[in-house]
Length: 157
Image (cartoon, rainbow, N blue to C red; front, side, top):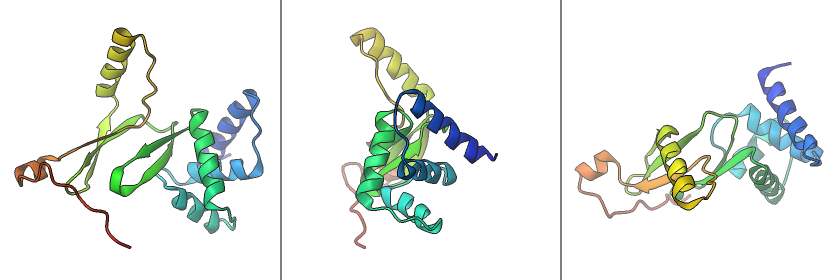
C-alpha cells in the first residue's frame, strides 16, 4: 500500500470510528486531497477527480470539503484574492502571510501561533482551533515601495 493509500485508509477508518458514513464520493475527495498535496480550491479537487475519470459537481465537492473541515481532517483558509483553499491537516502545521498590495504569500511556521493559542487558553479560558491561518498585511518589499494601505485587485479572467 502506498503512503497516499495509507493516509486515505487512516482518514476513512477514523471517520468510521466516529460513526460517520464514508460514501464513495467522500472517499474520492479524500483520495484527491491525499494525491495532490498542498492547498487546493474546490475546482482544483474537481480537476484532480476529472483526471482520474470521476465527475462531481462543485457543490458536492464543497459540501464534502466542509464536512472534512468540520470533522478536523481538512483546513479551510481564505487567502484573499487567491480564494478559499483546503488542505489536509495531516500536513505540517503552517500558516500564511498574505500581502494586500502585491498578493505574495509567505509560509509562516506554527511556532508563533502556538504562543497565541496558549495566550488565548490562559487569558480567556478558550480552546482555539487554529490549524491553518492567513494573516493579511504588507510584505517587506511593498513596505519599502511605500505601498502600505494599497490593495491588490484580483486579475480578471
